[in-house]
Structure formats: structure tokens, C-alpha cells
Image 1: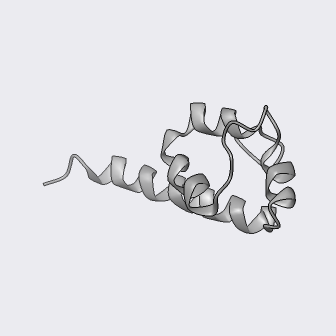
Image 2 (image 1 turned 90 degrees about the vertical axis):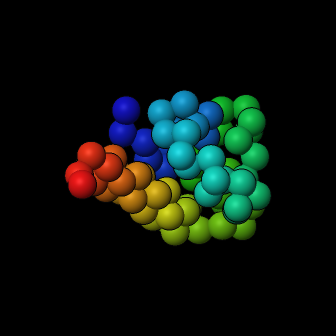
Amino acid sequence: MNCDLDTPLPDWIIEHPETTSVFSQLGLDISCGGKSLQYVCRHQGLNPTDVLKQLQTILADCKDDDRGGGEA
């Protein structure tokens, strides 16, 4: 699943559990009743695009770690 601004926060957590730390750091309620990332960010006074970039960075870092993990 390709998560984006319209993806509900619970779906982000299901698909990409590593993003939980970002939501926690930003004080976003992951049990938000299925509201989209964009909706929750706007209601918390956060820029949704900035939050999405943070999440994408975490996902890219984890992907890089997975690829490099088997090398000696």
C-alpha cells in the first residue's frame, strides 16, 4: 500500500509500523477514528506536507537499512 496524505493514520501504522515514532514525537493521536494524515495534521496545527516528508524519510531509512543489513 502506498500511504499518502489521504491515508488514515491507523493504516499508516498497519502498513509501516516504523512510522509510529514520528506520530508519537509530533503528538498525533494514532487512534483518531480513521482520520486521514492530512486531517489530523491540520487539526494539530502541523503542516501535512512536512509530516509526510518526515514519514517518507523514516521509510527510506528503513529500506536502506534492510538492503545493507546482509552485507559484511
